[in-house]
Length: 457
Ligand code: AMP
Image (tube, rainbow, N blue to C red; front, side, top):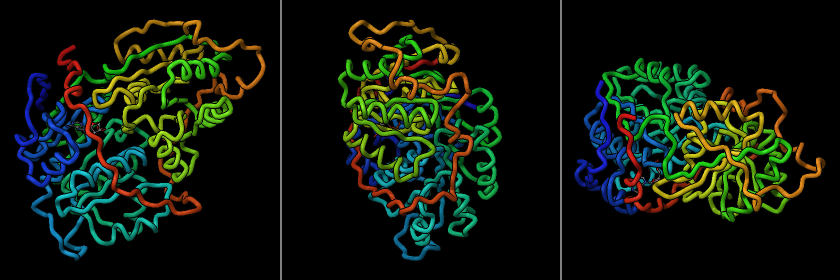
C-alpha cells in the first residue's frame, strides 16, 4: 500500500488532470480555479483505476475529488439512447445520511451537466414509489443511503450487477457496526471486479483495518493528519453549570451576533426542546433529528441554508458532510457520544477556507467526553468561563432550564445511527425529489491551500 502526502507547494491546474473538456467546462462554470489538495492527490489515482482510501478534512473538496474522475471513467459509456438498457448503474455512491445523499447528488449533477451521463438520488423517509420512475429510465450514477437502496433492490427497481465503481462517502461511518449489515448485503450484489473508493475525514485504526477487506491494493491519500479538526475553526470550551446551560447558549449566540448557528445536542429530545426554547427566547430555530420525517428534515435544513432561521438544532444526523455555505458558528450544547463526531460537527464551519468558530458548553456530564475529544485530537483545551458580558442572566433556579437539559446520567443518544434507515416509514405526503439546480458557489480557492498540512505529526 502506498501513502501519499500532500505537497502544499504543488499548484496544479485542473487542466493538468486529464479530464475531458466537458468536465473541465463544468468545473469552470462553478468558478473553481485550482484543484484542492485532496483533488490534486486523489484524482490521478482514481483515473488510473486504483482503489483508494482518502483522508481529508471535511470541507476540502472531497465530493469533487471522487465525482470528477468518476465521470471521466464513465465517459466511454456515456450515450443519449432512450433505452434504459443502455444506462445501467455503473457507479454507486453511498452516504450515511439522507441530507448528505441529496448534497452529493447535487454535486454530481453540477459536474456532469455537459456530459450525457445520468444520475439520481434515492434515500429513505420518502415515498419509494415516487423514486421508481427516476430509476426506470436507467442511469449511470446512483447516490443512495443503504437502507433505501436495498428496498429498491428488493422491489426489483434496480440492478447493481454492472457497478464498476463503488464510493463510500463518510466511509468510517459506513463501515461501522450500525451500517455494516446493510453494507455487506450491498457488497454481495456488486461485481467483485470493481474500483472501490473510501473517503472520510476520520478513520479509526480498526476501521482502517476493516477497510482493507473491501479494497484491492489500495492507495492511501492523506491531505491532513488523520482525525484532526479543521484549523480554520477557532475552538473554545466554556465550563458552565448544568442548570445554566441553556442561558449560556442564548448568551453565546447573542454575543456572536451571527446570522446562522448550528447547535448540536446528543439526544433527539434535547434537540427538539432546545429549538423550541430558543424560539421562545426570540431566536428563530428549528430542529433536525431522527424522529422527524424526511420532509421536515429537508424543510428545516433548507430554511437554515436560506437564512430564514438563525439556529438549527441537530443531533449527529447533521454532523456529517453537510456543506452550509459560510456557516460562522457551531455550538456543542452537548458533546457527542463518539469523539470522532466532534471533528465532524465542528467541520460544518470553517469550510472551503472560510473562518469559523466552534464553542462547546461543558457541564459535569460532558467532562468525560471532553477528555475523549482531547485524546483523539492529541491536544488539550483551555477550560474557560464565559466572559461576564456573555454570562447567563441571573438564574433563579426555576423556569425552563430543566426542560432543555438532557436526562441526567442516562447514556442517551439519537439512536438514529443505530437504526439508521426507516425505509418503511413513509411521510404522509410524498416529498418532492431534490431539484438539481443549486449553483455551486465559487469558494476562495487560495484559502483552501492555506491550511497547514500535517504529514507526520
Ligand atoms: P466538500 O468537501 O466536497 O463538501 O466541499 C467543500 C466546499 O468546497 C464545497 O462548497 C465545494 O463547492 C467547494 N469546492 C470544492 N472544490 C473546490 C475547488 N477546487 N475550488 C474551490 N472550492 C471548491
